[in-house]
Image (cartoon, rainbow, N blue to C red; front, side, top):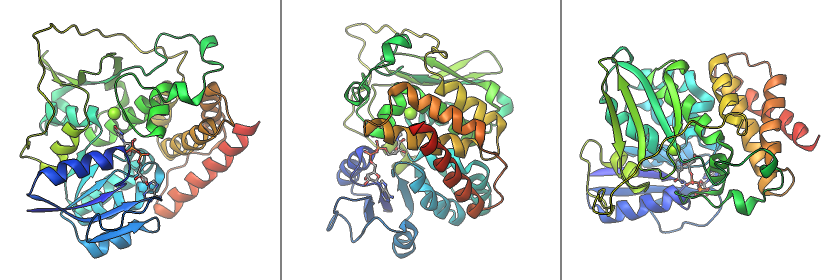
Length: 352
Ligand code: NAD
Ligand code: MG
């Protein structure tokens, strides 16, 4: 029996996790939280909004599935890492923003950090715990989102509804917009750097429009291992919740009876500048990744509310990164300050 606290239970990841937990008697939901919608009765302990660590203190779960969206997921990530409680992490924003602080908490806690993000779950499986010196490079794949192949001119007037129409994945609104700008792939490069201890120059991004190849690892002996499957988040969620059991899911295995063609292409870094901006923020280190994430959250919210054009998301993030000091945070208090300052600058940039 494994007890689970599910944070973000009403979201896209949260609902798929509920389905999987319901289908696996060895998984027991002991606590559930959401940001706004009521979730009474979903689990013995529930909470809407507020400090999620209070819920975790009461629930004492074996596994925390953090499927909150955005920086709001940070306290729960640190709570689990600090205590050595297994963390199934969908909330990539917390690892991107807190980077070194999160890894230091994990070293103290000594628990498992299992990525739920599909590319990182795939890479985790290809790596099998091997250390960075065995690895030549990691390749994260992306679909390219709904605007792959378009020019900058063709992106000037795109509406939120168009950005929300993802070709291969059905996800919450924030990550869907991030997929359209390629900010999501940028966050994932930083996420991979912290998860796998690889320098940025050994983390590559390639587009694979049908999202069948989730990641590849090139090893130093010339072999590359890839992880393939239909795009369905129930696979990486189940992998993290039942690790190392690889419990069954309703997702079918790959079928070759109709043939299968896989095409790869490089991302267009000029049309989608957020990918390179994220990489640069990661390389600069300190609180630059935190500022990248904060500014992006502000800009995506403004875009979804119709206050900012699509191309304004990247320019808001770029202006914010040019203004922040980026000094490393020594503790959570300083990190929260860096996040707040970046949000303030981004709000200003997004109305300019
Ligand atoms: P979503 O918007 O569908 O759901 C977000 C959930 O978080 C909701 O339950 C919401 O109520 C809750 N929430 C928001 N703010 C909160 C707060 N302050 N306190 C408590 N709960 C709060 O988002 P999603 O698509 O499920 O994504 C969740 C996370 O998983 C994101 O970090 C995203 O990047 C990551 N992720 C999602 C997918 C996917 O397929 N949806 C894939 C990879 C990674
Ligand atoms: Mg992903």
